[in-house]
Amino acid sequence: MNCEPRSCGCALIALGCLVAVPIAAGLATASSAGHRYNNQDGLFGASTYSALNHAMASLQFTGPLLLPVVVAVLAAAVASADRDWGILRYLYVAPVTRGHLLAGKLGAVVVAVAVAVACDLLAGVLIGLAVFGWHPFHIIGAPDLSTGATIGRVLAAAGYLTLCMLSIAAIAFMLGLLLPRGAEAVAAAIGFVVVASILNGQATGRGGVLHAIAIALPVRYWQSWPRLLERAGSPDVASLPGLGTGIAVQIATIGVSIALAALVLHRRDPAA
Image 1: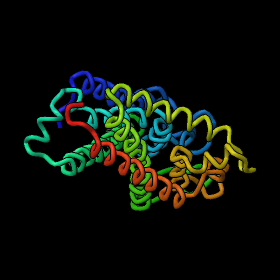
Image 2 (image 1 turned 30 degrees about the horizontal axis):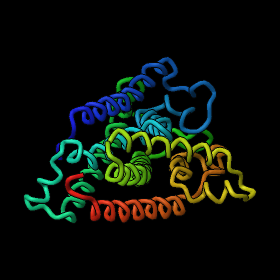
Image 3 (image 1 turned 90 degrees about the vertical axis):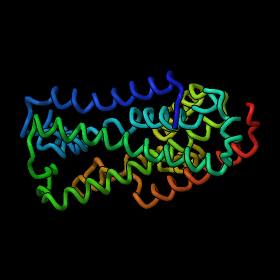
Image 4 (image 1 turned 90 degrees about the horizontal axis):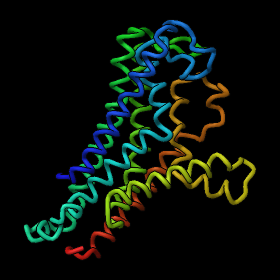
């Protein structure tokens, strides 16, 4: 799938920044290798014990904002590339049906999201190997995990996070088809993430309008996966929403966004 040079350049820069985070964090915390980092709890406190510890802490750090921004940039670029190039009408003449065009674009978005999450995870593992070495996954206040258990939980966490990123990718993709330019779609998607995060932070568990809105937003559940890798009952994860609810909300968000994207593409003038 071709993309506008400017969009591709922004996407590559965003991906480079994403990969740079675990590298910079690994170098900055190298002096604490094998020891609890800065007396912190959870994944951040255990990040200096092993390569996978560092990789998962890096995912938790980039997950709330940087990773969604990268994913939004990639998805919006895929959605708007042919229109930014002015070749959309020629794709229909080729002939390429709107259904095939949508399916191809969605496939490219899924690949882009998987690549973004994999790059973030792989960068964390590689710099973690170089700085902290390969050791059992350490959980503060609980026994270390075996290699098999660690890999299983890491894959489950990465899969859940990928699903969460697909929800913001679907939103950015829909906006990329709806709005005139890809840059506008990226800005709108990032704005959605920021506003949703603020609403989620302000909402309380005592009910009310903000809470009712927050529980329907996919952003609320993006940080639920650390419960897979932290001590059961830990204060860091005790208040996190359940994974099952998070999966349901992400799937609903993806479904609604794709339906809207299909409607936009169906009604769009090829010359637009």
